[in-house]
Length: 528
Ligand code: N01
Image 1 (cartoon, helix red, strand yellow):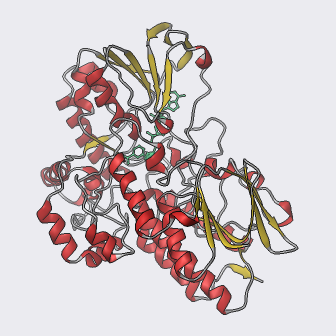
Image 2: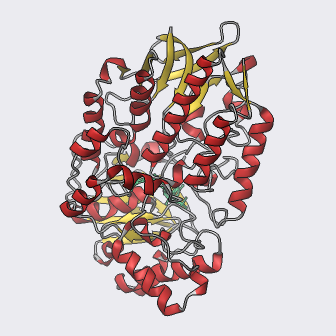
Image 3: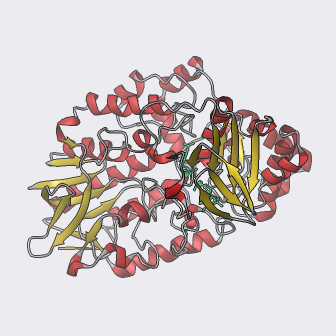
């Protein structure tokens, strides 16, 4: 009998295992993959790298770890991130409590014993008091149901299930479907190797340059001289990172056009998400947001030589409404003669043929098809498991209209079950490792508190859950996030209920709410 079973051994599962073991609990983590690393094990397509600077996208829980690890680049690439996950697993002796190649298919709460029964696809079972779902909000790849896909005679690769051996695009006619963060990283690299590349774009993306390169060692030394202070300052930011570039003191609408553009330009040169942190009203005022949109559109028009292609690449939705893409040479790729951009916003992909794709009455030939079509975010990974709570309540049924939750960490009707970086938390808007550390520390405190107070179970109450969801909705209403079809809204998956799933209130506000709930003796929860 376990105290805690953790589903997933990515960055969330690894820290949960370390932390919960360190407070004396008997913990087991399982992962479907043959390796630790989660997202950074699965997403190994060419060009895969983090979009938050590595000095910020890394664990802060151990001073020795953050001092000794040295990133080679400003934005680490997938192999280095995977090495980091493996280093952490070794350094904290985590592997002895991790079962790999183990896919959980069911987790049922047994009311008579107050325990969870967790079962894997190969028939193994665990009894555990608590379950921590660390299976990641972006771990269920979305493969659209394109007619004819099974009859395609070339190779089909999904960005999130990339093969382990290198893929050689030399001499091939390659088609990429999608222009989100994954595609924006894949496209420039494929374009270098392939004979031709055709990109099928439904919605153009805003992409800002990463300006990646070797890590500036002076900067690294400066951060490491007070890493704890740097992390603390980052946690005061809405996004949980980026404290070195504070927003302009005035809103975008209160400065002159020239000053606003100078700030945007400075942020563009800084690279990455800095642009969205330029002014505090970019996420709350569509007129302010439009200035940033137009700034990026001007950049696109200045980079892409063919005006018709540039126009097709210019997004019309608010910037940041869909996750901003961070790129290396994305727009310039469309200046290559061998790269074609096909707009499928009006005439969708009709079908995949044995030798290509059919859209707008024309067939585009391809030897290799890359699906960079994203994920069934937040709910997908949870609903792929048969989770049943009190009274055999199924999570799939409970979430039919959207992922009801309390604090993003728990769901009413599912005692002793916690979710990391899921719907209802700020995960999608923070450096995810900051979110992970916050959630796990909160859960660890909660489990200790339960034992100290002689409680066996903790469970969100339905009124607290309803209040949290209406707070999430009320905050989202005040932002620009409802103005486009994003995976935050479930809008990328046909038939998925439209609900804004992350908490848009910013990390400091979210963390304070969670802390207040704990201070108030876990207000909104029912304990037995
Ligand atoms: O997925 P996406 P992603 N016909 O959903 C298109 C993180 N991430 O894997 O926009 C035609 O963003 C779809 O079109 P539309 C990051 O949080 C981070 O790229 O729905 N097209 C879109 O263009 C990111 O946000 C990094 O109209 C179809 C694309 O496929 C999240 O993961 C790198 C279609 C999917 O884009 C997801 O990114 C990679 C159809 N039927 C990912 N269905 C870093 O940089 C879908 N599309 C760290």
